[in-house]
Length: 87
Image (tube, one colour):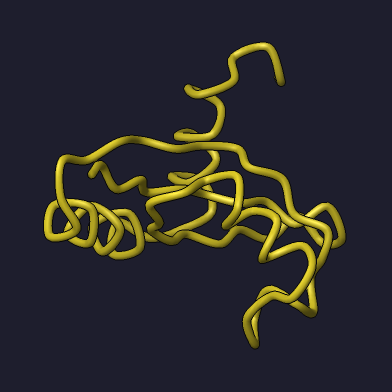
């Protein structure tokens, strides 16, 4: 079963959250309804980027690489690539 690396953007303060999941729709719903310690304070969230990986190991490596690459500018560039119509 494929695993997705995803990036959410907070509509409250425009911060980002990077994670992995098997089910994008239900994960977004979870962050918007229940949340984690970090995400519940910054609701609502929108999905701005996702990419599919064949297994959890490669998805986790990619999640780590995105976080390690660091910075809002890099994450925003991924989001912009995903949705070029969003300026």
